[in-house]
Structures are given as C-alpha cells and as structure tokens.
Length: 368
Image (tube, rainbow, N blue to C red; front, top):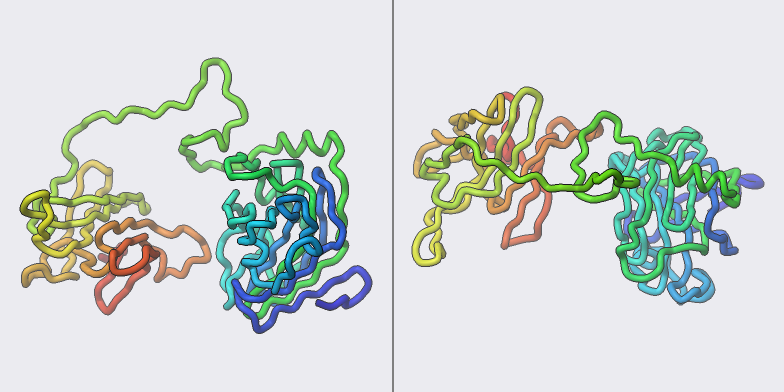
C-alpha cells in the first residue's frame, strides 16, 4: 500500500491469488450505522477483484483491528472468523487471469453468506468510477456513477444481530491486481436519504420472476397472497421406452434455446428386490421439441449402447446420475462453454461440467 499523492491510496497485490494474502486497508475509526461511503475507484490491472467491508466489528462489540487476534491478510481471517461480523461487496470482479466473473456479490459475515448477486458496473479497467455504498440497518445499496447496481434488505434469518456500526475497509486480491482509491468520504444519512433508500425499487427489467418468497414484494393488500398453483394432468408428452432409458428415467431438465426446447434426462435400469440391482450404467439422454409438447429423440451417434450408436445418448461418464443442464447466458461466457450442467457422482464431489471430450459432447448444440 502506498500514498501516491495526498488523498490517493494505491494497493498492489501482484503475485498473490484469490483466497491468499491480499492487500488490506482499513479506516482506524469506527463509523456509525446509517451512512453513505463514497470513493473514486480506478483499476490499473484487473487480474483480481476489490472488496469493500462495512460495519466490521467483533460480534461482542470488540474493535475489529485492536480488540481481536492479529490477522494474516487471508480472506478467511475476515469472513470465516466467528468472532468478527461485517457486510462486504465485491466490484471489478475478475479472476486471477483477468476474466470477469459476471457478477458483483453482497455477503454477510461470518460465514460468507450470500445476500445478493447483482450487476458489476465497474467492469472496464483503466477507467475511473465513483462508487457509493449506502447502509441503513439491514438495507444496503451499491451505486456506481449515480446508477443503482444492487440493492437489498437483509432478511435477518441468520443467527445473531446484523452488522451495524464498525470499520470500513478495502481488500484487493488477485494474480496481478492494482487499484487506486481517492476522494474517500463518509456522510450520515438524513431522514430524506433514508426514505429514498427504502423506496428504491429493484429493477427487474422485462424478465419474468417466479414469486417464491417476499424478496421482490414490498406489501400485500386487498386479499393478495402468494399461492402455489396446482398442476393439471394432461396428455403424455414423451415416453421413455428405449432399452437404454430403462425403468428409472429421471432428473429431467428442460430449457428453451431460441426456437428449440431442449430436454436432458437420466436413463437407467434397475431390477430385483427394491430395485437394488443395476441393469446397465446410468446415461444422459437428449430430446428436443419446437412447442414443448411434441418431442423427438434424435439419433446422435455419440455413445455406443450394446454395440450401436443409434440412440439419443450424449454422456455415459461420471455425473450421469443427477445431470442438470442449462445454457449459460453470461455475455462473457466462451462460445464453446455455453452449454453446461451441474452433476453429481458418488466417486467425487458435485460440480459443474462443461464437457467436450474427444468427439463426445456433453450437451448437444444446434448442429447436433
């Protein structure tokens, strides 16, 4: 950390990595709740990310720096320490090799509890941004150049009291991350600021939202309520009657991809008492439709089943048991990694598959 000129702090974390020792800079004084934190941010080198902590204090009121054991600058010291609480938000969120991760995350500590994954409006290196963080009790908001990037209210479902007053600080971490901070200012929120913060709507654009909880709902009145609609039985859309689909097809995942609906599902065969004997290894199969009602199973010629590739199998390796496919719409996603799946295997941890092994593709593209 260096002061390159009065009021300008430069953090250089070259040679580290995310999760390792980072550059940490904290204001020595504690700040109250109901504040706005503002600063100019300029990312010189973006192989990494920047985190701003707010309301950092010991869970029993201790000073975050002097009242608790010394820290070594690794992330876990600040977010997994059960004696230390805070909120933090990440901006200019790149990985160690300069690839943007697509989001800006709000978390509550201890425990790295995800509060909100929002837009990162600080994506362009070598550009100065004006960052503002508003905090009023459980309400937090991030603004960049006067635009709301993210906004949430802590639902207070985690153990303990929410972070309120405490330290403000920065963490810079990455393979080659260098950033400047200047024109730092903290101001108290007056009554009108607090009202404006409380009334800031969440911009959902034109996307459809599934109302599974009250996160997007301010109030309900006039008899309005959340109600789960009952499914209605209709005609059979698809039969799993092929030998490789077996007796226990399941784990269907369906998504729309342009004019095509894509379906990925498990094919498996169980036999014997309690269906405990496996007839053949678990497989991942593919079907497609133009209306979501009438489905076809193309002969893909990818995986051999009992000596023939005339089938709709796309995968017969690890992870076939609970293969859940989706299309990654992140604009920064590489074209060859657009189709992904979460998968589970008893022989290894659950993870994200993005497979193109030899001539076998884990997910079928438009060319089949």
